[in-house]
Image (cartoon, rainbow, N blue to C red):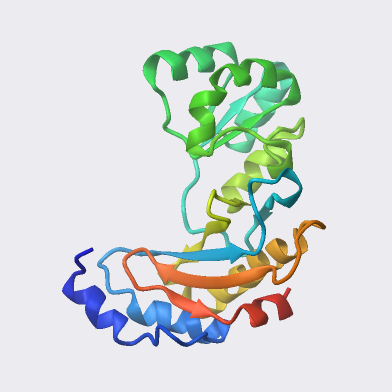
Length: 233
């Protein structure tokens, strides 16, 4: 992969062999973020589990103390009073069968989070094949299948993120923007890593957190000492 001049300059500041303290790593991420836009800071955690086994799945959701810095558009599948509650809480889109039709016929995906009341999951299941690959399928473990739609909408707007293993046993999550500064990013980092550590499956053996890397959108990855992440949980 060819890298730009700014990336190469930033990469020189990072010791690829060193595992940094969490705060030190975040300071380096901010120092190496050279883009003209407000870059997102992401956390990538490799776990010592096997996502192919159901008893070793790691998945959950958490509201970051300082949010993600991103405005979130919410779609809610609900009817009657629950639909009214969702609209009052700030959901951009609310519907039922009509929304399923819109997604199927118009390829409608102008939203970031999908929430559904339990009684709507029958019709939402019809579009599971299109929502699932995009990471949009409502899930009880993530709090997006619920009768308390108002709370779910407010939490999504406040910066609730879902963490889950990918096929390579890595969790990828945003923890804020470069403009947040070190203190807010550190708070968000501790909250997310703490949640991941507490979600350790009983079936997981040996070292749980194998590696931990933070990076800005356009910047190089900075390794964090996995032991420090576990200690702070």
